[in-house]
Length: 102
Image (cartoon, rainbow, N blue to C red):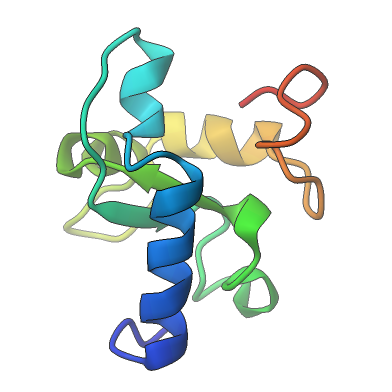
């Protein structure tokens, strides 16, 4: 996945705006923290068909991203795998929070 393309930069901005520029991982713990990163719940390299889907993208802080992904290996952490398991492909968790809460 190339993160320097116009398409990605626009999608990233869109997702951050959707999430109110707040780290969604921090919100799980009752903490308000700014988000600067957009994380792929289903990794873009493994699931290229999902790389630009809103439901597959989540705004996170640097700390939040580290909780979801091992930044050295690129592998999902246990929390990242748990988030992936709770995310139903094609279902926008932002709109279905009560039914498909992540």
